[in-house]
Image (cartoon, rainbow, N blue to C red; front, side, top):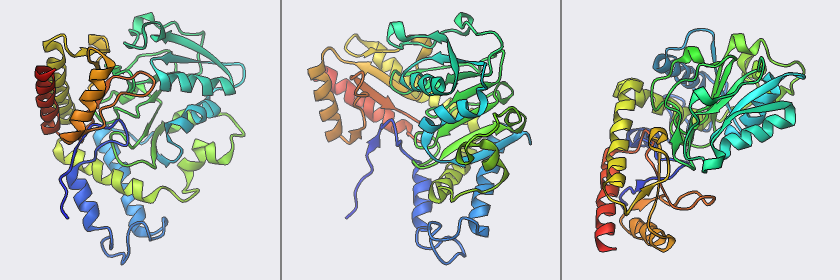
Length: 358
């Protein structure tokens, strides 16, 4: 039985590029000359080592990374990184600064507080996290150990549109907009991202960390949580299949033209959808215009009953994953890198018809 692929607007795991899925399908039983699936061979084999090395090289090419950067494939998701970053880089007697822009940054703050002193340099909580506080409003502590930001906020549909210039090493949770635009990597000391939204399937967390920053790491960090251990050797079995898929997605990105082209495509998709939201008063965007995310477009309808009908009707048309996060409700269309423009156009057509028939 042949089934048509849906238009997938899920916030995560998100949609993957069709060419990547097709290539993985063709290699599922036998990977190249290995005689077995990539999932069945040793993680220390030449075949898997070549996959991981290729993925690291793609990251270097896409982001222009120099030799100071270490590229780690870890597990535990961004949620573990909330704690691991603080455990490694927040020394006793020092303060870390956090910018609070939503639920995930709030969780990072909570985990940081398990380790040491945290200063909330800025927050948009009072306005329902409808914007990212401008950098001019951030109030830093004296000599912070690091500054932590969340570049895109999936629940509230906001994003940081600039690379912050801060008075300390900059750590960024980029899980939901990683590789969606070029980055000034000179501004960052550590970037982490769960792969399942924009660069691969669930199961691997990519951590980019400067070797020079790791020199500041706290002593006596538990082995599995010590970045230095993972940078020095393959300590435990990595998430082989997830890394294998990430390599393919990165190669797909490079073949499309890299991050400049990806940003152009993402801007174009987001502009189409936001223009439709703003055309009438029937649909109401929830994020302030200057902070609108190109990855997660959040909006409301006149009432919750209409929102439920919208979600149900969209599903019948093959438009899925549109229900807003349970904490805020409403509608959320996640239009990550692999979401095709045709899917956005199909959503807009449905929105037109739904409003007309309401």
